[in-house]
Structures are given as C-alpha cells and as structure tokens.
Amino acid sequence: MWLRIQRLNQWRFVLTSKVCVPQLHTSSTEPASSSCDGLYPGHIHTTPIQKALLAVGSGVAALRDPYRHDMVAVLGEATGHFALINLRDKMKNDPEGYTILTERPRIRLSTIDVANMASLPEGSFGREYIRFLDDNHVTPDSRADVKFVDDEELAYVMLRYREVHDLMHTLLGMPTNMLGEVAVKWFEAAQTGLPMCAFGAVLGPLRLNASRLQTLVTSLGPWALRNGLRARFVLNIFYERRWEQSLEDLRQELNIEPPPVILSAANKTST
Amino acid sequence: MAASMRLLVRRAIRLSHKNITLTAAGAAARSDCCRGPLVCRCFSDEAEDRSTHFGFETVPETEKAKRVYKVFENVAQKYDIMNDAMSLGIHRMWKDTLLHVMHPQPGAQLLDMAGGTGDISFRFLDYIRSQEERQKRRVARSSQTPSWRDISNNYSTQDEPRESRAVVCDINKEMLKVGKQKADSLGVSAGLSWVVGDAEELPFDDDQFDIYTIAFGIRNVTHIDQALQEALRVLKPGGRFMCLEFSKVNNPILSRIYDAYSFQMIPVIGEVIAGDWKSYQYLVESIRKFPNQEEFKGMIEDAGFYCVKYYNLTGGVVALHSGFKL
Image (spheres, each protein chain N blue to C red):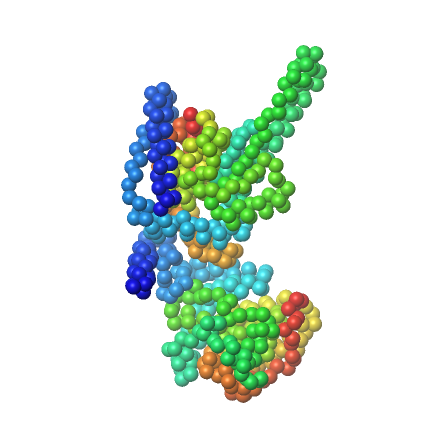
C-alpha cells in the first residue's frame, strides 16, 4: 500500500515537472529555456557567440585562479568540439573503447567499491588509485558536470575524459599540485589534442616558481610529452575492469615509462 | 494549510478595512492626477492549482517562491560583483537616482524591502547624514550673531529629532548575511536593522514607515498585488512607495541591443564569475515577464496608492515608480 502511495507521489511529481514547456525559438534572441533538459541532464543550449564568450571568459578566470576547476571544465567544453569528435572516433575504432562507449561506465564513489579496492595488494592499480585519492585529499565526485557540449555521445566522451583524469595522475605518478597538474596536462595534450589541455600546458607553467619550472622543462615535461605521444590511447582502457592489475603491468601495456622524478603530494602550498 | 487559512483571514480583515477607507477617500479625492481605485478581491482556488511563470518556464505558484529562494541563495556571495559586471557599474547610478528622487529628510523611517545586500539602505543612511550635516551648517551659519531671544529659544527647543532608521527586509537569509558582512566591513551599524520577511506578508504593524522601497525585487514576488497591498499597509499616511525595477525599452534599436546583451552575455558572465548559468538565465527571463511601465503603474494604483508616476532610466531599461499613501 505504501508502495502505491509512493508511486502516486512520483507520478504527481513527474506530471507537475512536465508542466515545464521548452520555449524553443520564441524569438531570435531568446535561447531555449535552460531549465528543461536539453540533450542530456544538465545540458544548456548555447549559441556559437556564447561559446566564444564562454571560452574567453573561462580562460581568463581559470588563469587568474587555477583552482577554479569549473572554469577549466567550461573552457574544455567550449573549445573541444572537433577534438571530441576525434576522440569519439578513436574510441569507436578500438574494441575496448567501443565497449566503453556502449556501456557508459561512470567513476564515482557510488560506482566504485572503495573498501574492496583498498584491500587489494600493494602495487595494484586499484590500491594505488585509492592511495592517490587519500594522499591528495580528492574525490572522484568533485568533477563538474558537462553542460555545453551539444551532442549526447560527445558529452559522454568529455565526461569520461574528466573522470579518467585522476587515473592519469595515478598512472603517471603525479600529485595534484601545480607542477603535477601541468605535467599531466602535457601528457593529455599530446594524447587527446583538446585545446583546453594545450592552453593548460602552455599557460600553466607561468604560475610555477623557478625551481619547479626547471624541473618541468628539463625532465618532467619532455617525459610527459614523449609518453603522451607514444602511449596507447588512454580513453580506450576499461579501467574499471583492471583494478587488480598491477600498476607496473598496466604501465607497460600502455607504453608509459615510470616518472623520472618522484613528487610528493605534500607540496600543495607553493607553486 | 493553517498558514494559508491565516493568510485568507488576514486578507479578509484588511480588505474590509480598505473598503471603508477607500469609499471615504473616493468621495473626498478630486485631484486629476490621482485615481480612487475600487478593488475587488475574490478568494478563488487554492494556490496549488494556479500556475505562474518562473522565467519562461511555467511552474505551480507554490514552487516559484522556493525556486526563487534557491536562485538567490546560490548567487548571494557574488551578487554585488555580478551587478557591477552585468550593468557595467550603471546600477550604482540607478540606485543613486532613487535616493535623489526620494530626497529623505532626517528622521525618516525606511523599509528597504528585498534589500538583500543593503545597497539602498547604505545610500539612505549616507544621504541622511549629509542632509543632517547640511542642516547643522545652515543652523550654525544663521546663528553666528544671535540675538538674546534666539539664544533663549535655542535653550528651550532642545528636542532631539527622531533618529532615522533603515530596516533591511529580505526573504532570503543568505542575502541578508552578505549584507550584514558588508555593513560590518563598512563600519555602518547605527540606525540599521536586518529582518527576514516575505513581501507578501510583512512582519510589521500598520503605519510604521515613511518610505517603502523595493529595488529589483518585486519581479521575483509570486503575488505582486499582495506585496503592493502590504506596502500600503505598513506605510504611514503620507508615506511614499518607491520601486526600482527593470522594465520595457521602447526604442527598437536599443531594445534589440539590450535583448542580445541580456540573453547572450549575461548568462555567460554568470557562468564565468559565479559559476551559475541557470540563475542568471532565470533573471533575464524574469525581466521579460514583468509588466511594462504603464501596466505596473496601473497595478500600483489598484493597490490604493495615489499620484503614481514613473521615471524611465537608461532609456527604459529601468523604471522608477513612485506612489503615495494618502
């Protein structure tokens, strides 16, 4: 009986929320009402002018405050259309990548079994990922939603890229301080060709102090670039099925060298 | 349920009072510029059955207030920065104009409804202070060489003028919090109080305030007519109602530029500065849904205000409406 009442309430909610009527193209200057779902939950329709303005604005905002991850995300979405098409095609042409595109796995605290992964043997990919999350005090749930990509499948590719970013850190052994992030950006720029990664790779070093800049230019940077170019395409790996695989093994499979410099996660204060 | 019954009872009582005063006023009023409104309120369906607009979306009335609350809760921290960014600083001129037209004198009691971050109240207190200083200077200048009679008069008329007071009232606690922080950082505290309240049901007695202002807030109210009636109630006879709100731009060229700017730029600015596209999309849509200058003037007159007039600012982008309770 309670179930029936609950279901009734759900239907009422659905009916009242469907009162929202998308006001598409009521006039030339009014975009579609953004409070109704677009192509996917969270989608916001934007005109090309708005995308250009978003790209410029978010770029400036991200440069002024690199910790504004939402601005980095928006920059990626506003500038990444062609790169995303390229990435999606790469995924389609690879069997494992194609599986990802059809199954659409998500990496969130609700979908990964943290306790199980923490009990995996040392040196396994899953264990190292959990260690990375703990050492750097990050969580996979803090990724911004995709809003400005105008194709549902491309939006998933962008989301997958964003969720896999932390796994990149684990694979490359880079912490989440400025130097580590820039190194990962160099790697990702070479791998994905996303303009946002390129901007981050070029402009990020501006915020580094002299000694870290030297480390970047002499050893970390060339290593990241080299590996980005020669490694297997990182979005084509179904990471959720490889938690038990050893990290070294996975690196070899992907053709990634271990990092030349060990950076500790404790250096989060200075850049 | 109990709350809505209370609301209905209060409205019934207020309506009966108002009808009595209106018929008396209607007989007495003869001026051309003023119209004696006759208001008929019908207590129709429950609010849940009616729907209203939330931007360009249609929502049940009960939901609108909640969603508006959420919008302002999200934008409160960046509200002032966003105002400067979106209006390129022009909003300061609009608010200064409101104060100049208001021309408050020392001793005035202001209710700054939807006052949020306190912009109007701070300006009000500054204006009063400068008026007081001007008065003191005038008094000092005129009493440079007083006669004996003047000196004895000065000793007897030592009654302190009533202190001016500004009450900032807003339905949203986040906005008030930001406003209080601003007041603390500016060092303003005398004569300022912060009250949580709903414009449709004010927590004040009748005939309390000399001036009631609502700046860029009334378009977010679900029942604008109720807010106007409440404004009439809490004002003293002779009190003034003033409303700053976005309105219709009549010039076609300016209107197109304004529309393009509103819909293309403002949500983008909202996303970049405040990280919130949808709230600013709502704000620009709500401007389009608000009645134009003449219609709003009619609504103010219907509520019972006299001598209602409006001033267009920046070509009609903003309109300043003013009415008196007589």
